[in-house]
Length: 522
Ligand code: SF4
Image 1 (cartoon, helix red, strand yellow):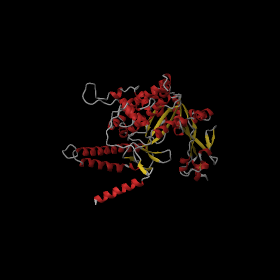
Image 2 (cartoon, rainbow, N blue to C red; image 1 turned 180 degrees about the vertical axis):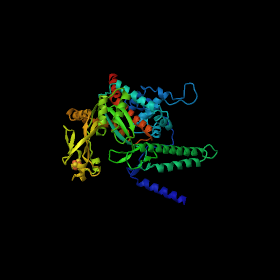
Image 3 (tube, protein in one colour; image 1 turned 180 degrees about the horizontal axis):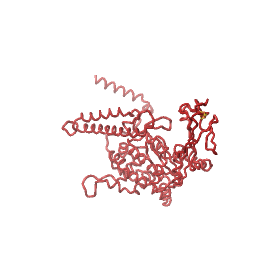
Image 4 (cartoon, rainbow, N blue to C red; image 1 turned 90 degrees about the horizontal axis):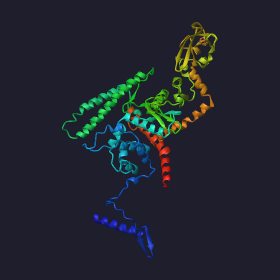
């Protein structure tokens, strides 16, 4: 049977050769086309000129030039290998940093992927000098030392400043939501988390002793480690719940926290949807769009982030910006007041307060909203739509404004035909007359001027450029790591990469072109 098959196969081949379209007629005869042989059994040794793996203006060279200017002493201090000592030599922190910066610039934020690429990608081969780098080494380095990373971010800023690339006259702050490594389904209430924690503890006890003589100890230890990490996340989830419980004002809803990333928060996205995320706040100077500060927070809105942004710029540069330009998400009276106290010229859209929600909740009809009550300055009283007088009670300073409280006469409201529209729930009627502070009045007047409006119009282009780079070019739409500290470090890596790429474009490349021209190299 096997022989028959071979014969049939041979006949078929002969038939194909005869009728093949790859045959060319040569007179009466036809000749088969000739192709280069593919020999996959051979062994080849090729010389590699490592220096020529990348072009002279390749970004890997710019990255290496930058990291070589940085002081790595804090990172070097952690290295145990010493000249004349035992064991393998450590990788130079400059190299590990350059690999990560290059990886982020290429949209690669996985340690495994970068380690794999070091074997074949020319720029990484050039950076490593054809040495292999283990993915554990890369992963550990990325989150090893937050203080050292912050120091390096500041040092890069110092170098950019020395090159004249930074200017603190005008700084734009903007926030961007980056998704967490947690799904919406991982959010649980306290009861469920406690139940899962109990199960995890029972599971660890039931797994037995990892130091016993049983087979497959490595697998057992790995499983124990995984469950222990899960247990730690659940314990942290309970701590986060306690924090949320303290912040919960009058909401009836019990807070929920993610079991896979307890520090992530569900935040509104730019597309209107909601997703577990972190809020990355970026302060960018306007002259060359250099990032001066990056902070990652759990805040769902930007209202409370302006002062943190100012503090971070101050910490990184030693200076307070002369002017801060922000969108409406940062404008509240308290921020206007504090910016004025710090001597910062705040530019942003004027926010109109909207008390409608609370008035509706109190059952008050629009015809009896506070603006329908007439203020009489001479007597410091209000006159209601029924022409009754509300007398002054007290004044409170709150959120950058003064709130004057007035109250109607109980008997007037009791007998008033409009009572069901004016004060259906709480009688007699109370009305708050709000008066902006001097700083808020000055801010509002400033934002009416064409000059301030013109400055505000430049905000989007400057503030949103780094956000767009980080998300679109570096691909950081979702964090790879978990927890506020680690995702914060990921955000700093991306911003550090952005600043180095700006330096390459604005300083390194033009200098290279000038040097080549001076040397007569085309
Ligand atoms: S309910 Fe009281 S405050 Fe309201 S319109 Fe009547 S008298 Fe005036």
